[in-house]
Image (tube, rainbow, N blue to C red; front, top):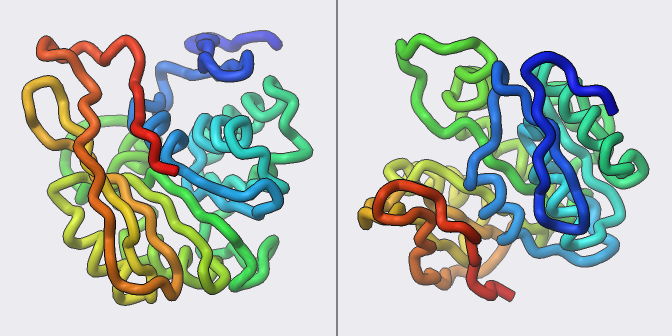
Length: 240
């Protein structure tokens, strides 16, 4: 596959999978890898990713879980094209279906109450005046996907007992918990990530539609050395 200007090819260090990133667009971070490692599914599950970006999470989740089908929703045209390119690069066209649409229109391709699993690394910062490209702004800030819209769509898509996996800004985790509770999504597991300086950065949750109360909180996952460098190998705990 020919790389375009500003694109680079990276090894995902999993089943010989590769990923193309474009430095002028939004590039994925350790959040994506952490979430993909946390998602738990059954072999014949039908899953949905909200905000697929370059496709890295869906690609990793499919490699680790061998799902029946993943519907990967992505709203931004340039990210859609890159996601499609990465799906083709890894020969996953029959397993990962790119949906070039707003998640609010999910019923065009998926009936309400039929998804087994939904996972998302959504934009989780409040809108700011920080100068950046519109693509990066949409990927990071709640411009096109407010939290309530995300959780409402997730609840509608999932069947009873369906699972929702999501990572979110740690300082806003209370908002995420309340939003989930309001839509009958009971949080069953969660953990936080912290950098090498002891600062908590990210909350990662697993919720079940119609689930009972009671949440297991796992120990924090340290992602960085004390000097800020990512740990050579991010080892997630055995959450099974």
